[in-house]
Amino acid sequence: MIRESTVERVRSAKNVFALTGAGVSAESGVPTFRGGGGATVWKGMPFDVISSAQMVERDLAAVWEWFDYRRGVLRELKPNAAHTTLAEWEEKFNDFTLATQNIDGLHAAAGLKDVLELHGTIWQARCLACDRSKSLRDERGGEQPQRPPVCGTCGGEMRPDVVLFGEMLPANVLERAAEAAERCDVCFVIGTSGVVYPAAGLAEIAKRAGAYVIEINPERTALSDLCDETIKGQAGEILPRFQI
Ligand code: BJW
Ligand code: ZN
Image 1 (cartoon, rainbow, N blue to C red):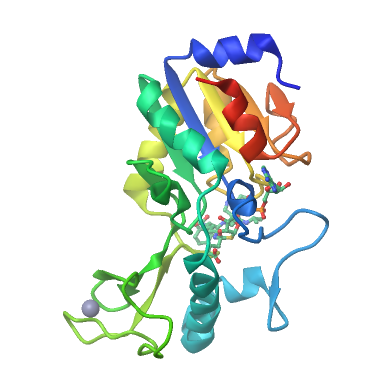
Image 2: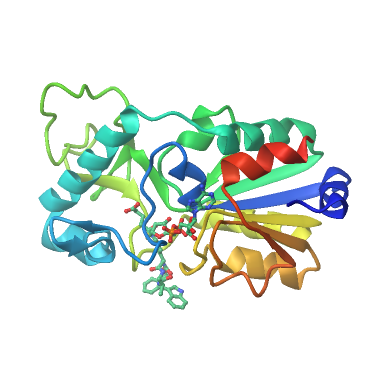
């Protein structure tokens, strides 16, 4: 299923950039947003409504409920073979950069040291007043933590430290990702439907700069036509086969 010439091209690459999305965590049990013809709905709300900037203003409590629910699910889940292979690649390639749209922390849990989290992280809260953040890792599942959390510095209300629809991505993270996309010889686009911008634009940057773009996805996506090839299949099965 993977051409020998593709394996060779990847093995001899100096600069590799990977853009990942929800599909890379699917084999760990994390639900994707889209794909399979449907879209995630929570308590009757499509995810692009509950995961939006407007909802933080309108109903912060509901936003916390949605992310607390998902954090609860994530606590039980582990990285899969896709995450661990990509963590190994960081050690093996001269220059390897991974930018993820995922907020689940599973790339880091697999040992990847430098993860560019384009859409933030579900494991942190951020103050609406002074922008300071704090970890939510230590909150115990049993007792109900304070919602919204209160900022230890200024006493302001906190929100999940994730990037919702209509919000800017962290500028320094996006900039580093764009630079890596620009200089790579091989770009992987793994487990993303490629419809959310500016993240999807990173594959376009790589392609325009002359990279060979390889998609790994069981389905065709909005980026398939741009890619030099699509390897159809599950990321956790395909990635280890490169044997870098
Ligand atoms: C497998 C698999 C397996 C399954 N192996 N694969 C240009 C044009 C049009 C609109 C815009 C534009 N530029 C910006 C916009 C607006 C908007 C946008 O992109 N909208 C489009 C959807 C139309 N973008 C934004 O609002 C962004 N901000 C922004 O642009 O700021 C500037 C601005 C400010 C003010 C006004 C306007 C602009 C922010 C986007 C933030 C997105 N946030 C979310 C939610 C995060 C929090 C949360 O988790 O709730 O991020 S949305 C959601 O989608 C989440 C994901 O990271 C993101 C991408 O989804 P992803 O990862 O691709 O997942 P899926 O489910 O879509 O796909 C999974 C894939 O996996 C499928 O293809 C499966 O087949 C595959 N798969 N199993 C491999 N085992
Ligand atoms: Zn504060």
